[in-house]
Length: 179
Length: 385
Image (cartoon, rainbow over all chains, first blue to last red; front, side, top):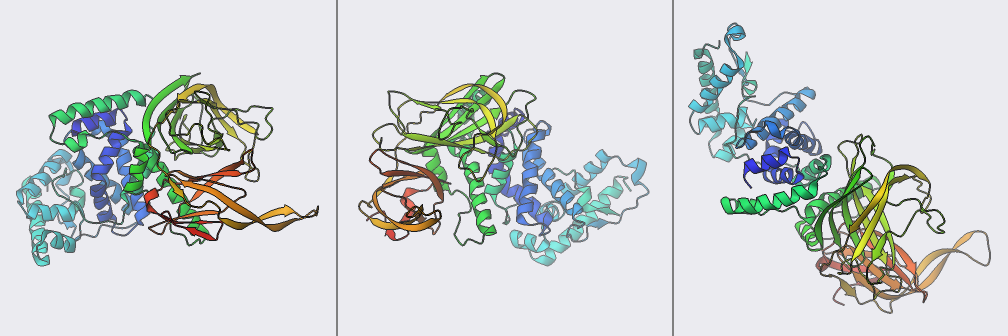
């Protein structure tokens, strides 16, 4: 069934539509959630987080644009899992998560919309496979060893491409007048 | 300093295939989620629309497999049976019982459910309350019905009470609150019938909605030539309202009314003509001794006595087993995957003094996967014997 139809049924609170979404996206959402939690919770507790993602869709289906369902689920799954992690007092396990940017220019000069645009542009400009590596690690919080294994790229190459991505993002944010 | 992971919070990404394995159970997630949502009351209209939309879309899109999706019997009952399986497993773990319990219903069991039932999708409104019969499934002796109930506005249906669809009817001897609720056409009879109402997990115990599985079972009581739960003889179930009775684990049944949530008149056609599936085990004439507690020689205290039992017949269907003998028996059914078919049931004596007992399986079984049956604790019977 077309996504537009499914969203329409969800907005009318038809449980069948939610079940279709669950059938199609449980593996994906579970993977997003589990990568972020990385053993900080039991599988049973993590299942509750995945459940919350689908319940959020059930309650907020009108916010989802047609054609953007998967991205919406990923964003909600990511936020829910990160929120749980913060509640547990734990942090993401990432390869250098920090960018050294001056805080001075952020206030006033940068509005959220511009920052989002700059980040998107920086990521898109990376090209493949750098973009995928960057997103797998910093968006999906996939460990670099797994990225290396799944994409068939050796570990040092993954690290160097992540470094390049970080630099690109920093440059883009600075050139965009955001720092 | 900015965190890159924070900068990506608003990023919209859906191009990467994340397929890594996780220890999370898709079935439990589905069960958990579907158990927390409350379906709207006008489901019958919505479902017909879904079918129409699905049919239309199938002509227009290449995603034909998804377009053919229809909400089936297994979709209604699957999560409820899975929930039951989990309850059994937790109970065994608490009590250190070493018996294998399946993880969830497998595809074979779901297919069995689908083949044994139909989606009814009928809503009846009475006195401001509405009850929707979503689906039924049955074999010869047991019928499960999936109901969604919406009490009148302002009436809260909380978690906890011992719910019943049966109104209190005074004057009965054995069970005063059990009124006759199933009407069978053509002067046929189901024998003795009884029912159980199981409330399903609820996202909001402060609203006026609840979901129930009603299980009807029959003990033929020597009237085997009459109606069955899966034949074409028209059967009507009358529900008089929703009530809560005082829960008392020490009484077999209780008739103390705790609360009336609403009363009304809800007549549902529960006819479910589907193909009968059963295995008739070769047990005729088997004898064993069964321990019973009884008073001996007028003594005050009960003593255990061994009672000789002769078995007449044993039939096993996907939802139930029915056996006939001249006493009580302990029945164990083992499946080829090492699991056991868990059941409970009821019995009645016919006019010739034979006992008829119907065992209700907690979850459906694939009768082709029965390994063996132990009857009376001594006889091990294989289906092909």
